[in-house]
Image 1 (cartoon, one colour):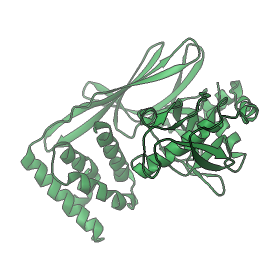
Image 2 (cartoon, rainbow, N blue to C red):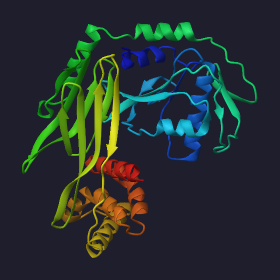
Image 3 (tube, rainbow, N blue to C red):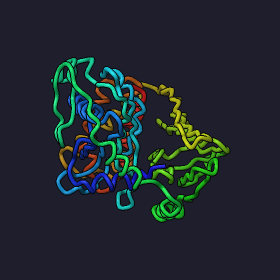
Length: 377
């Protein structure tokens, strides 16, 4: 198995991008421009590497190779994006790679583009890129052409050498386990489990009991053999189950309006470990948005607006408003799910003000609310 953290270090040791790897501070798949640029780089690397893997490293400051990290990315539809815009789409994998010096919620993104030995081209226009464009790499630059493009294998040996030097061993595996335990406080109960005598999985989460239900908060799961973070959730209600072949995570969303509340199943993730040294991840979306009393919701929405207006004008909040501020992202999300006009716009508007707060817990709740709404959509 390839140790992905070591592979990233080996790639960055080349200092500059080249024809088999690229590095980005971040990617933005929420806009046409962001999608188009990501597709361009995937297409160019695929066409320039017909016989070997190619890579995009995300979360790295370009000039000095400083690893700054990005948020955990769990969008399983990224392959659908590739398939819908490309003729001869390559198979790609997006993985979240933890690094010791990064904050716990940050990772380095690694996109692996598998070789297909076919010319990949745009089958649909997007942004300023027209249908039929063929992208390819010339050094660190992505070029384009129309029509015929001759595939050339020039990087196979160097990439195979990089991957071989990143192969896992007992020392790297043990170092990974110790590193995981050191990065998680004792109250998060870091532990490990071995599957099929091949996979070492570490997980951590703060245990809490609500009535007769056992939940874990801030759950973090890593496959140590590959140094890949398989799962991360800032939600406070996560259920953990496992057997000899699978590790099962079910996330719940706690929603409350006045005295009406419940734990709502959000998404189930199943990590299956196979005998052939491979694993796969299946997800099932479970969330059914609850409907609350509209009169209560309008009262809450107006209160959120009042708090947000004070933040915009830099006016001090009262003690009650400071308490309400903690739940502002969740309350606006509930309003969105219940069809309150302009609630989504207000939630988006709140982002820049919540990000400035010294206490980042409310901003984390904003990111989780945005993630829930993205999944629902």
